[in-house]
Image (cartoon, rainbow, N blue to C red):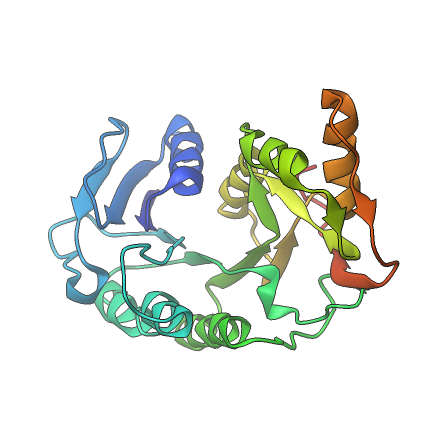
Length: 253
């Protein structure tokens, strides 16, 4: 199977490597040159995409991320990256026999922010402009590929580095309230995405999370205790954020 990656960062590279090891052909498209030797890399702007010189594409992963070097507003960046990019990619893929397209979105499309429980059956009701734009992107992909498109909504992605959390532990003296956080390890996300290409009858969308929502202040407090740092003070029992659970029976734990 020839698999195309639109966007090629830390998650994409992990998925691509797994699929290459399963004897699939890999082609990637990204803004900057890449060096992984198991894939053919195309350095292209998605608004000037040319896939005429590659072999027919059977499956596509769309994992785009906003540029950090821009003077645009957050909403403008989201529009440019996620919404306006759909049609140029769709137009270019028309000549390819695409049987599956996996689009990575975000749980930001769920706007709840008072400690509610969210699962795969929850309605998508964004509470901010970025969430609305992500939901619009999902709809555009589903309209273009109603039978082939699968949407994946990861929670917060984390890796092996603990530097950010240690910094928070060192600098946090008080925390305003109980804020629920949800995470998925980058390797688990990559395994889940790689698995989706082999599912004969997938759902239209999936939440991807470790099913272990946790108040963020508790996570910080645990690190403070481990490092012998002064412990933060919780200022309010008010709950914000949401508790997110994935219900897929083949979800990667």
